[in-house]
Image 1 (cartoon, one colour):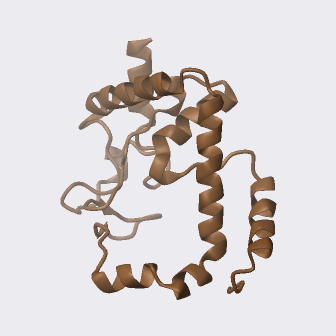
Image 2 (spheres, helix red, strand yellow):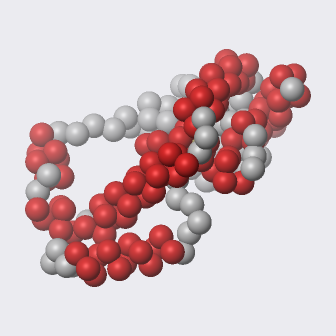
Image 3 (cartoon, one colour):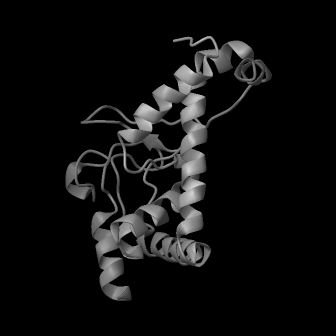
Length: 177
C-alpha cells in the first residue's frame, strides 16, 4: 500500500507494530539479536546455540514429505538493483523500510545498554563455531547434500526439517559444562 510519503502516518504504523512486541530480531544480525535476547530473558550461551540446517545452495523439502528442492542462492541483477533503488520501490515499501530502520536502531540502542556485550558476542560466536564442528555429520535434516530425501528413521529433526540440531546441541552442552 502506498502512503504517499506521509511520514507521520508511516511512523504511527511503525509505532503500533513496535508496541505490539517486546523484542524483534534481525536475521541479518542474528548473532547480535540472539545475544540481546539471551540477556533480556536471563538465558545462557548454550540456550541460544543453533546449527544452520538449510541455507541457499542446499536442499530442503519444506513441510511434510515433498520432494527435495534446491534453494537457489540469492542474486541481484542490475535491473533488480535499479528497481530496489527506485522511488516506486521505496514508496511501496515505506512502512517496511521504516520498521526495519526502527528495529535496527532499537537493537543498536539495546546493545549499548548491555555491559560487555561485544565480549559476550565473541564468546557466543566462538562457542557457536565449536558446536558447529562438534555437530558436523551428526545433524541430519530432511534432504542430504545431493537432494535425496533422508528416511524419517535416520533424521535428527523434531518435526519436518525443524529442530534437527536439538539432540546434538544437548550432547554438546552436557560435554562442555
